[in-house]
Image 1: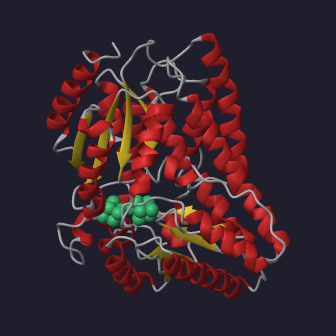
Image 2 (image 1 turned 120 degrees about the horizontal axis):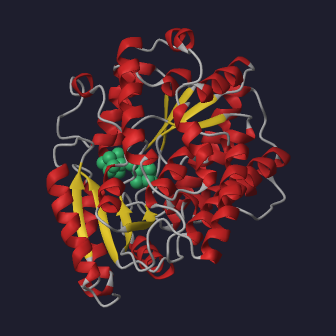
Image 3 (image 1 turned 60 degrees about the vertical axis):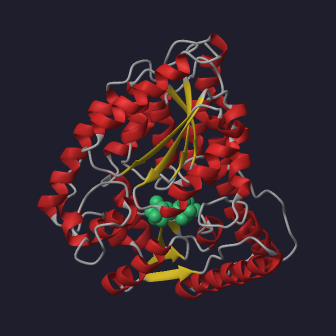
Length: 430
Ligand code: BJ8
């Protein structure tokens, strides 16, 4: 960190000693996993900086916005419409949920057999380690998986700031009506806490900011189709993780600048790994920052990750919202429709996700698919079977991984992934 932020962290109520320890671990991990990579593009330096200041500079900005009366809205899911938050001059932040912290505290409230992501968001809050959650005015939950929706009840007891959106589990006409009502209700809630009326003009401006961000991420995703890959999967994952924290306008301009550089690299045939390196698509549970475990193992095993069919990845940006409407209600309904195009395993049936995976395999020229499920994440663990069947009747190289945030299974993971990469190398593409 470039400055001493102790006073700010203390005023946010963080556990200073434990927080210092966490930053130390994070910085070491970043050094080992990220800064040791070879052939990174110049434009990635901005993202290195963002990470180095993830609990520093960015929190200063957020606290300043809060003092100006702008609402800070914490989220855990890509179904929460960012357009509406920006339309009331709010700041949307994805809350800390990607590391094994505060587990003992979390397990006082949650069963041990809860997915790591849920334990982490409870752990970060209970152990006083997340300046984002402490800065929020509202934490928006959603009725997606059972673990999350039950944990939100407890998180609300602890913080008193949780608002839950009811997300249906099916995508039929009745469910879509319910979801539209929920999105309108959320818009009213935001207006209520800010005193700002959501107008057509505000919605247009907010949508164009979010849309530009999604377009930049789409551009980055498309560039990963080149062989050699112009950027590592680790770096692309990082950018997707940062998209949930950073100022959206600045972020978009930085991603576009990086993409200009990557286009030049692609033209010149410059990559992070030699042409012909095995290309892996990862699909499944989201990888919240700083969960870099699987990418690090895959890329350390001689493959390159070319895409993430994940909420920290393609599911977050694959659909744009770029149509204009003549009334606020119509626009909000269309925003609700846009979010219904996200294909999360919490839905049944969820056949569209299978189509998304097949099309990503094709577009990104992937040679193998690793299905990633956090342990105890039933929706993705169960859906892995259908994913495997869908891709070429089970003949496309597939590896199913169930893991958590701990390092205990690293040896076993490495062995399985190295064998998988070897199998790809011997496959028809080589
Ligand atoms: S739209 S994937 S961000 S719910 S918490 S489902 S890991 S058991 S996060 Fe998600 Fe929204 Fe769906 Fe995406 Fe599993 Fe854990 Fe549940 Fe999780």
